[in-house]
Image (cartoon, rainbow, N blue to C red; front, side, top):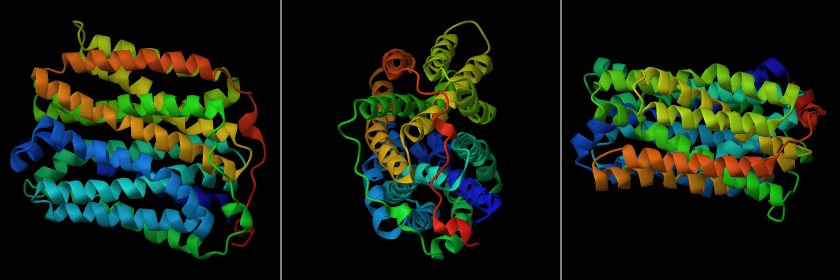
Length: 394
C-alpha cells in the first residue's frame, strides 16, 4: 500500500475526531437558551462523548482482534457521520445527548486504533504522530471557527451548523472502505492484553486523564468564559478559534522535537507551564488574545505527546493498540469529569474564576506525574514497524 494513500486515510480519520465536540462550544449559549438547560447539563454534551471515548477504548482492542483495526475504524467513521447527522433533528435534549453518545462511541473506538495503524504501516511513527495530531487539531479548529458562521449562513439554525460535519465523516468512512476490504495479516489482530501490571502504563494513564480534563474543560467552556467576561459571541468564538488554530504548528513540531532531541519530560513540563501562564494571564492586565494564545501553545504540545508516549513504549502494532487503549480508556474517563466540574462550579458561583483556579491545581498535579514519567530512550520511535501483508498488496 502506498504511503501517500495511507497518509490520506490517516488525515481523513483524524479530521473527524473532534468536530462533534468542538462545534458545540461556540453555540453553547444558543443551545442552552433554546433547550432551556443549565450549565451542568450543557457540559454533558462534551462530557458524554469524552466519557464514551474512555469506556469504549478497551472494546476497540477486542474488536480489532476479531475484525481487524481497518474495519473497526471504517465502521467508527460511519457511526460518527450518522451521529452528527442526527443533530439535524435535535429539537430536544434527549436527541442531542443521543448524538453525543453515538459520536463518542465512534471516536472512542478509533482513538487507540490509529496508534496501532501508525505503528504498523509507517516507517517513521514520530512524523506520523505529528500528521495525526495536526489533522486532529485542524478538524477541531474548523468546527470551532465555522460553527457561528455556518449558523448564520444556515438560517440561524445551530442544528444545521452542528450536523454539517457529518459530510466529512461519511466521506472519510467511504474512503476507508478500500483498505477495510483488503485481507489483513495476523499481525493486525495479534492478541495483546492491556498492560495493567506496568507502572509506566498507569503513569501515562493518569497523565492522559489530567491532560484531557484540562483540554476538554477549555474546549467546552473557553467561549462561554470569554462571553461571560464581556466579549461578544462572535469575539468569543474567534478566541476559541485562536486557541485551536495555534495548536496546529505546535502539534506538528513537538513530537518531532521529542523524537529528535529526546528529553521528553522537559517538553511535557514546559507545555504544562505554558498552560499555567495562560490561565494566570486571564487575570492580569494583558490582552486576552495573548493569554489564549499561550494556553493554545501548552495544550497543542501536550495532546500529541499524550498520543505519542504509548507508541514509544510499544514494540509492535498490537502493543501500541493495547497501551493506547489503556491510557485513553482511563484517561478519557477521568478527563470527562473536567467539563462537568467546571459546569457545576459555574452554576454554583455564577463565575468562572473558581473553575480556573481548579484547572491550575490540576496542571500542577499533571507536572508531578510528568516528572515521574521521566525521559524515554531518544531513538525509541525510530525502529522499523511491523508491516502487514496488506501493505504489499496495493
